[in-house]
Amino acid sequence: MDLNKIVDSYKNDMIKSVKELISIPSVKGEPLEGKPFGKEIDRALRYTLELGHKLGFSTGNVDGYAGYIEFGRGEETFGILAHLDVVPEGGDWTYPPFGGEIHDGKIYGRGAIDDKGPALAALYAMKAVMDAGVPVNKKVRLILGTDEESGWADMDYYFKDQPMPDFGTTPDAGYPVIHAEKGVAHIDLEKEFGDGGKDSFISSINGGSRANMVPDFCTGILKDGESLSTDGVSAHGSMPEKGVNAISKMLKDLADRGLGDNPVDRFIADLHNLIGFDTTGESLGINFSDDVSGSLTLNLGIIHIDGESGKAVLDIRYPVTYSHEQVLGGIQKALEGTGIDAKILSGHLPLHVPKDHFLVQTLNKVYKEQTGQEFEPVAIGGGTYARALKTGVAFGPGFPGNAMLGHQKDEYIEIEDLILNAKIYAHAIAELVK
Image (cartoon, rainbow, N blue to C red; front, side, top):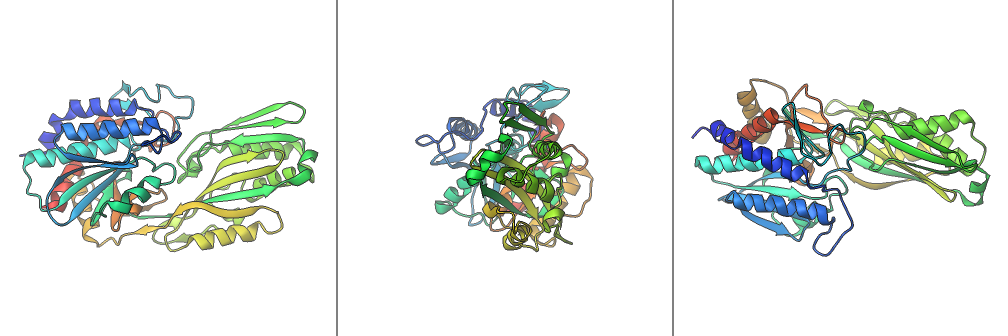
């Protein structure tokens, strides 16, 4: 049977499923018994597992931390890692962020492209391979994560007891094959103010919600009661140059007012002078680069200042030939004499699968056959679940030239792209497990 025709026959069901999954606001919430990341993420997980069961697959819920949907047989396993959690919706949407509304051939909503739409495209691709009767000599397991946007505690828990796939992909980035991913380091910058905090004209500053999002808001309160606010343009933390940083704008506004010689004001001045609007790390002396993955990027994602202490969190994506230690060491050197402590909050090591690896070669071949486009494998700054695999790469869902709206307002997935992704994934599965 023709895999593409089978996928086309699922079109209405796929659209319905994506709309329903988007309508679940699966932002990380307070942990509950059996629901480690909150009730809405749990609801999204249960919805997807139930859908997998209805489609004829075996399923498993791993204590609310993750789930899986599986078919096939054999000693080896091909894994597909996708996630059902989403970042907070942010503001200024044209359509409801959890409405799943269709306009001009696009399904709008938080998670449409990152990563609910692609997760379900992979699920229906598995269904197409199964219904086509393609000979399968490996297991195919779709692993559903629930904490990808926060700390990957889901994968830490999942792989304690569940088998590691022999190789795999994640539909959570773009095409062509992404064979390398920069290292990710979230760096915490902190300073205690002591009694000196009382001498500042600034009472508090707060901005950003996640380190891996360019902040689109920042607010401040001065001790005379005046309120301040700055607006930015959100973007993914791996591409900070595509956004406008509201925290950086606030730092500049305060510096323009004139900062005094006290711990609070010096903290703000140091952040302004050493980071400001820089997204390359040059001001901190960490503008590293290599031939495999390109240049380091830096995002000032969160700030919190009160009378007692100040804290800022940086999201740094560094080239694959560098290390956490080199990044942190460079920052610490730049901060000498400022009284600001720097430490790594969390991070992921770089990923690099050689271009001549069978997984990369097979996926490249499938992509060319299904789209007519030929590209070399690429490296990105985004961090995907491919890093959780022994051998894994990111593959889709964004097509070259298309806007990448993950973590931004008015996130959407083109219905045509949703269907084409499912076709590409179906052929990839068929090739890799035959």
